Length: 191
Image 1 (tube, rainbow, N blue to C red):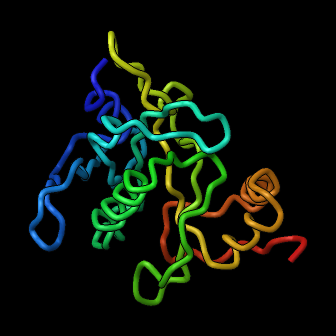
Image 2 (cartoon, helix red, strand yellow; image 1 turned 30 degrees about the vertical axis):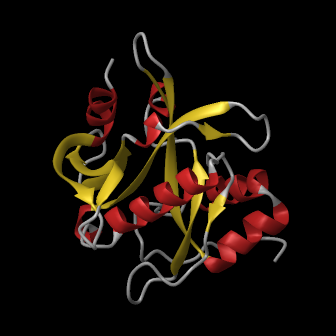
């Protein structure tokens, strides 16, 4: 299976994409906007080609080929998501480091005006079928598909202090709308 088919089978057809950054410089990978996939009324933004760079796991030292995606409800699709993915991808390339489950990117400033979301939590894509988390490209490589879940500063601090397992327990317990960048912060125990 090819990477594009793997993404489109779950996230929907590619609607448009970006090969250049805001300054007009070519990027070493693309970002695609996909929609009308297995979750209705959701748009996703995904890197395409980041996996051509060998990224290293800081825990095992293994080479990881990785693509990243962010999903939001279609009503919130106007946002800086392509630029965010471009910046995170470039940071990974510069650091020669892969993102692992439980990692937090940020916090920085709110990603949207009037939003409490300032960071991203790296997760397996549990809203999709189990096979989505690794794209097995025939005759080539396995590509890890990492879901960047928008989270608040306080949620990011919780992950760093209490660990990703406890944070995922809180996500299961409270079942927040992880596709809404304006969602309320989850009430966290131990804070």
